[in-house]
Length: 245
Image (cartoon, rainbow, N blue to C red; front, side):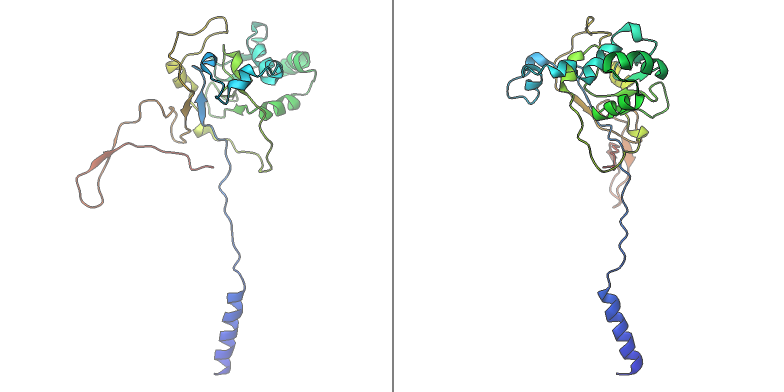
């Protein structure tokens, strides 16, 4: 073997032993806006075997005075309507005057004067913020936090802390509460129930980044798609799902 061939073979064996630099590309972690609508939730139909049964029949008095319960009572009090209020559909709420919220409401109900502490409580209880441009911009929501249905706050639990960093906003995946409200309107208050609806389990609305309407509403018109093998074209429904984790 010549000197050139020996050097070439030795260099190739060394390079094969050294692992190549691996580059891991991770998709950004965004807020999951999959929404379950509890508008027609019926406590009286729960059975002891149901997971939610103990929330209403377990004798836990703390849930009746927890953070979400206090916040719901504030939103139901017209005295604070110029500071904090429900959105027209009743599935989200917004702070109108942050300064008055800090000086009048937060000290009275939670004994503190820092908005940052209040904001951490919102995140800890699973409230999500809306970022899509429109009337609900910067409003908060939780699927078990609905106008006129304060008993649902007993289903809310604190979210376990993670070390995976802050989630990025996902405006295109946010639910359209105005469309949902057309199908399932909420009461104006706990004293004025909505028209009776048949009881049903919570309806799920998967997030659809390019779409604004919930998935359970009439789908888009069928898309005309031709076959790659020359067969007669067929109709297919167009469904787009989120690829974000």
